[in-house]
Image (tube, rainbow, N blue to C red; front, top):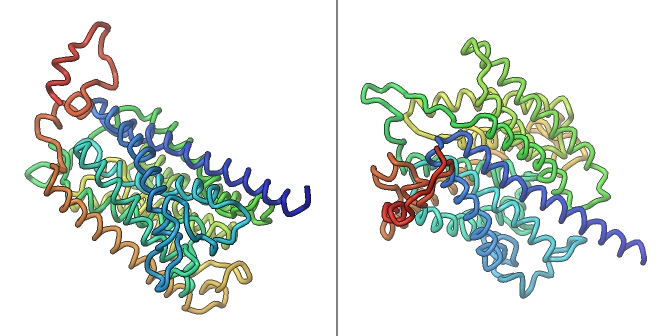
Length: 426
């Protein structure tokens, strides 16, 4: 075996393993969201995660990957590579197209999972399936093509987004915001007098385990984006990822302790995730000190964004927009400030690179945010013509587990359930 074959084999193993780590994050999403919502809706959360994986993979295989990475003439949309067939000769990686598809498939599944939590406890299951097809087949692949395809128009301008603060997280976060506004708050979340009612998480230990799984998988998310097992920046990427997540978590512990006189557990969980989201775009390009700053700012901004949503009477049960939309925006812009010289095509503003990169990052962020929000809103309006997007009042009150899926997530007492009666309610 020559060196080139050995290198290709090592890169293939590296990409497959890190893609598997990213797919394991779906278990993290499932536990995190099930722990944040009420017990009567835990099974519905798990079902949505299965939809993300199953429909997301099939749709991305059929045409999403082609739209994202196929050849094109104008930088807007790919036109080859359906079913991973046809002309993909422009993909010049040291891995096979099948391997690259698998890695990117893990990313698209993560993108749709962001939206899942924002509409928890009141979206209709069938409508969610249709939206999943829309997100994984059109919304994410097209904007992803602009940023990550070699011929994408934002890529040609010089936009930098190493592992997806904009392409995945800001897109998913602003899509989640649109979905949460469109579908409306949960019954009883906001009082007629403008007050906000707290909906306590059903299982914080479960949510914490979900966050730890996401934290673990994120090292595959960021380090795996090198697509090479011999890339010398893998270690630095892991360090910046760890420091940013730790800083986001620590900042939330300290900030909520000062602001509320108590260290808030759900905010602490989301603070770690906010730091991870914030560093994703620049993990390969910024210093360790910058990573700490990015993580800390992302964590504090997440808390403030969560409060702002509640004042605007927007119900986001898991903080999807605050974590992904806000922190993804911070991370995207931070690239324009902190990118070290000789690590990317342009240095950041604070390292003598001028305003050019920051302007490009801001333009890309604005485009992605508008795209995710507008296409989600329009898509849900279209779905509403064929299927109700929101469950009925009775289904919401009894819980989606029984009302939609016909089975509770947790058995309250030993005994048998009347299957016919439960199914008649769905």
